[in-house]
Image (cartoon, rainbow, N blue to C red; front, side):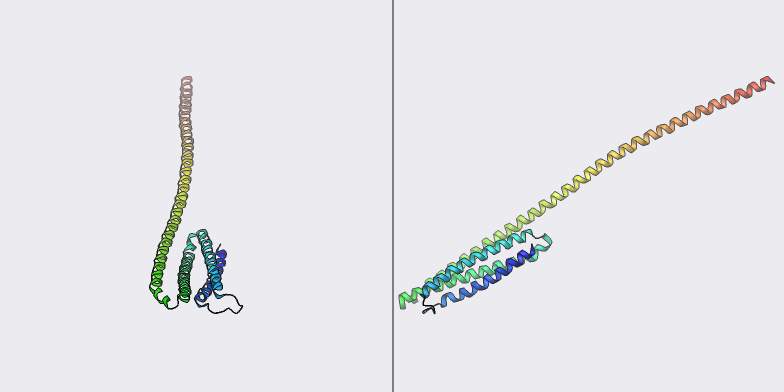
Length: 226
């Protein structure tokens, strides 16, 4: 289970390194490409590729999240911390990507408008502000989701503990019932033994009386015969 998590970690590291490299290049692409392609087309293709790679990174995080849920509770904390840092890293990449796209859009607009493009600074600042607000909202939603997942895990662990406790109580009840049944049998056996002892003592007493009476009679008739 842990080996799968580490594999996803390596894939995530490689993917984020590629995404970072491409995000940096997006606003800087200009002029004519060495292969003769249109630089605008290259920028658009790079934006599309980064979007696909970000989606792949999200899927990797989802896989890692599933792996963390399967890890035993005593080892889950370290992996949860690492997963949280990866989520923060992806959020930063998405934020940088949004800024890179905004810079790219401003560059295209400036090329089309020439000097009039300087008037777009306020719009750019407004877009950046909106992007940051969306980013903060996304982080709050992610934090809420994480809390819900952790609450679900805690609830599941409590239910499992309650189930184990219920099984222990049930086994204790079964042992008590078995012990009670054994005590009942032992009590009946002891009662029977005590009854037989009393009967034997009564018989021995009667037998002693008979023997004594016989001896007395024998002595009596012996004396009388003399």
